[in-house]
Image (cartoon, rainbow, N blue to C red; front, top):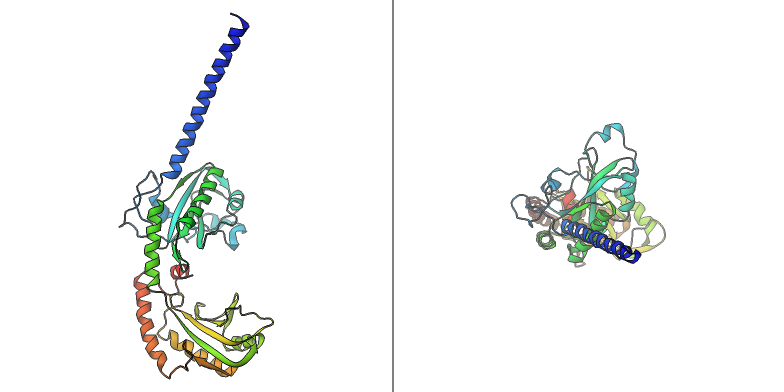
Length: 356
């Protein structure tokens, strides 16, 4: 056999090996795509066990909402894990009434420090919050990530609706894309509900919230602008406390009852600046139920107006009639009950999420 024939045979064998390798790679790629794009389970994460969900191949998806605890990436994500906490589960978990979960299961344990780096900046999809939960390689559930632990999966809880409206297709795609990147980075698999099912759940929740979303306001009108430093000092002397760029009136349980704002929308700064109009806002779904929710705000508003030499008026600029607060409080009690019946207890964690 000549050298030419030997060379041609060798080239033929090499070509066959290349073809086989290419086919294997294509098959592997298709299988991974199928795992990514055909997820799901027979349960609806918003409506619970009674509503159907998109059918798919997710073998363990039903346990995501019922069993997983919540590992977020808050201020405690770099804390040192103590021996006692390492042996217990975190109590927080995704909320199936207002969140939908994307589950990413890794090909092997992932160090917490690496997972933290991969999730930097991933706390929102558009205007919807995304909470991160995880499962350790010792089968413990976390509501925050610790650098010294290792994790075998994460669950991304995407908010279905808030005051910006229902979760949109673009926002869902952003969350799904980040989950896909995470899955590919750690050679994992991806599971989650069908997009159309998610958007329908989001629209349903948004409709329910829109029917219950109520805010009641009062205006403090001053004859001349007063320095913000003076206004803030008077307000805090009365009982308001600072909460970021706003002043709030706290309940006995340190929940926000109502808020003091500048009527022009500017931040309640402690430095320079002045204003001649302030706004008292009772955000009903975000405030704890109180038989005198509005009446209490009126009492505080009148005292604050007296100290600032201001006039307390309603939304139409008219002085508040004596006794008018009692009628408004009666109507608010009905709304508090409706919120409770809808599973959106006023001032509760779920209400604070969807009415943000």
